[in-house]
Image 1 (tube, rainbow, N blue to C red):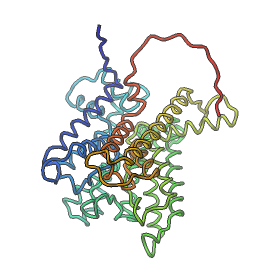
Image 2: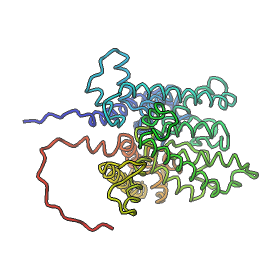
Image 3: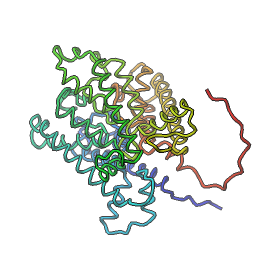
Length: 462
């Protein structure tokens, strides 16, 4: 007798992302979506779709010079869907269509945004949509003051809207390629106050998470009234912005890019470079080439990409709250406490266990992905239409893999030259990073009868 496959919320979430990727790939393969003769290749369309819907930003073709306005609109829609979550979009369409939102739909929505319970899902969805559109509109309005004078009204407004949505959704796609050179990102605006403040602030707000927004909205600026999750996210975000900014500011040689560097422009560029790895993918300082950033900035960028934003946000990575819980568990161990405590609260042991499992899975994927990239690029002659590049360094491999699974989009410049095998690896990592590696693994889990507990035995640790 054939067993019927249940469509659980976790499985629907995974299938939903796959459906978005398939549709997006087909749309980008339509001939008039790209500026080249004929249609874009399947691999180019697939990689771009995965990167956009998983709000990553890694690209194999420059967005501005390769894709037409139609293709750019498709990419922007994929970024928006990936940023707020496709289930949020479905939930909103059902609501606007007058369909009654039942328990099943609320359960799917809860899984999509990692909500702690089913209550208030309607209000949360409204907060997500209104907040997203409001911040993106405000960001686009401010960026217009820079892009409109540079590129004219029509193109300037489009670039402002595209950049604002891409920044808020932590995607990292830009339209600067046909203006300042392919894959140049925002390097022509290094030190610019409007760009170097607006884009990072959009990234930070998008990376805080929907639950933090709601908590701040409900309790205003009364820090003591915030939930523990909100307190940890705000503290970790502040630390991960201030400390890296100072390290980059004092660690870089600013005379490389300017004979007479202005201190506040260098500080703005440091702030931008410290924020964007969590997890947007824009850059104002070159990450490759003769005049690239120092190795300390590359290492710091990898660490920040690994950490990412916060749970229930547009960002990727292992998340700030995950890192905070693991850090607090170490503090509790040193202090000899049996439980993990913070702000007068005891953190559930299940949270600590889940955090450790998630970080372990994340690190495992990074190791496997890096090994595969090094292997495929060292034997690139085995792949069809592969560029004649003699492998990649370990640093480049790790950087690219962490950028993919943390859905960042920063690159040392090797993405367009990678073999098809390496591009497929990055696609898988981007998908796992956005859908959630634990979520994808749980989607294969089938309910089973509880088994009897096995005898316990301790294992030496450390």
